[in-house]
Length: 248
Image (cartoon, helix red, strand yellow):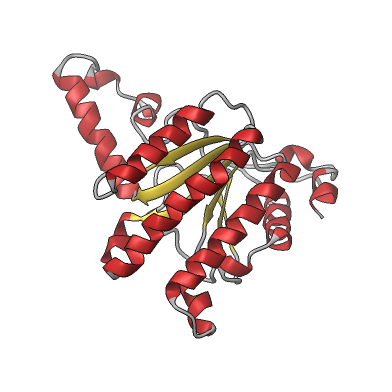
């Protein structure tokens, strides 16, 4: 279905940047009487399939919400296994991503992250920094509010040493201090798992993003679900506060 979508007359409306909240792993496991970790493992398999399909959609940027700062409230055993999944993802999937010209960037706080994982993150970003294909941005240990506060603090430091004139601060300067500096805002955000909220994800960047809520749990998300989300996006009118004249 992806090919037919991109060949329609509204091809110019296709999303360049898609963000996804991959929700529902724990519920998927619970419904099957499995430990929550099994849901996260299955969710990683779903992600691998998605990354192999995404080139068919001509998406330039893909941002994934994989671990929230708020997730530290979960049992230590679960957060430890989530850290282990990120480690395995980098170790097992990085070579294929690099071969496919994917640039990898991990955004979020580095606090509470084991040093061994930080080293892997740094290595992954350094290895793929010159790749020109899909820009894969993974929000890990991330919070939208934390990102904005971090930007404000760093702008304050720049003001204190004379780098920035506070009178001249504008949107462009502010955005340069965000984790996502240099990356265009998402056109489309997809959330799986039937919940209808954005959960502290990209609070600044999602100002004009189209939102699509998918009923299926993330481990069950597939090409058909992505087709539906993109088709829905391409049928919408994006006005950015303007008015589109209707032709009678």
